[in-house]
Length: 183
Figure 1 (tube, helix red, strand yellow):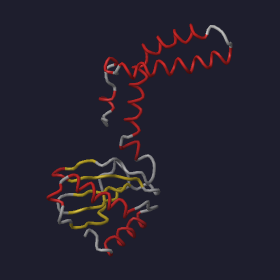
Figure 2: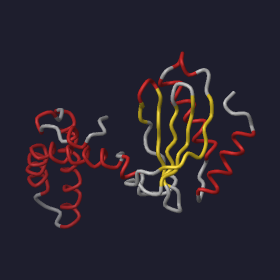
Figure 3: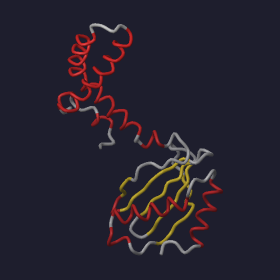
Figure 4: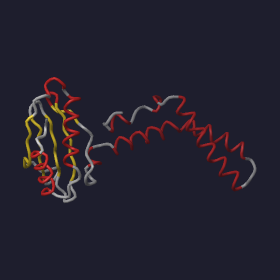
């Protein structure tokens, strides 16, 4: 699935026929039940007309649904909530990175490159200044590329956990360093 909202708004003609029929039948069934509960008559005519109308307008509903799903997965949407990581993004030269907002409002940026894994903290998304909190040497990323970088990033994310503040983040990373990570 695309993460670009502009790409999510596809042409209405690109929605498949089976999905349109499913939407039309679903809408007709719901309205049929409601009509039957309210009046008890003329339900089949109303259901048929509703099915035709739903079939015609269903691509607009499907495109809107896809667009809302893309917005929900966007990094800005995920950074509105504390302790929710953004999706893994590739970085230059085969690495990976992710961001998370702490409960105190600071942003954590975790990055895995070819030879190091680094964790930075920023006060806000728009601020340029960032502070490096930890750096770890990695020796085995050169062969694996992005899948290996995502696995290392997953280990780092698990070790960080859900800190409340920058001090909690530093404590988690110190415990990780003391454990001898990465192996």
